[in-house]
Image (tube, rainbow, N blue to C red; front, side):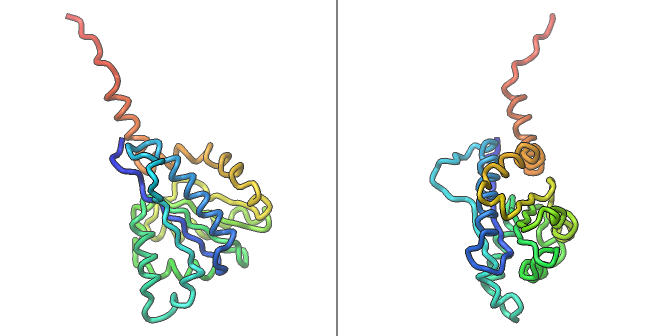
Length: 201
């Protein structure tokens, strides 16, 4: 097993501070962290909160300014993550301009190696492909690894978000574990535990 649990970051691109998008991102990130904890030697119950939260609404005032120290710190936090949930509400059939302004601050391959789950909160099920059509290409262009389909949650489903995440993780968990290398670690650990084959003499 790996020696440390993966660092997980939740990012919300909703322009309203403390939004339901932020809550959905944080809840999904907590679930992903719990999933990945199972493949590490770190304890998920050690009292350490390894999920960092970036609420872009709190950075909106400086994203387009010549100097943006708080945004730079958020950029570094996301780039250093092992896994991130990048969430946005649907605005004009796409992700928010706030999220775009933030991601535009990265240079080429600014998210190289980060495993990202795109999360889209929409008022209409017809917007289910916003994550795939608009957000995924930007993340991939920045070098992120996006191993699963986007997680799409309607506003009506936010009241029962755990059930939505349960269903999504049933499909997404194997890909997330492979992308973070935990599936390989599991195979190595299982091989180490396997008895030596008998050798005929």
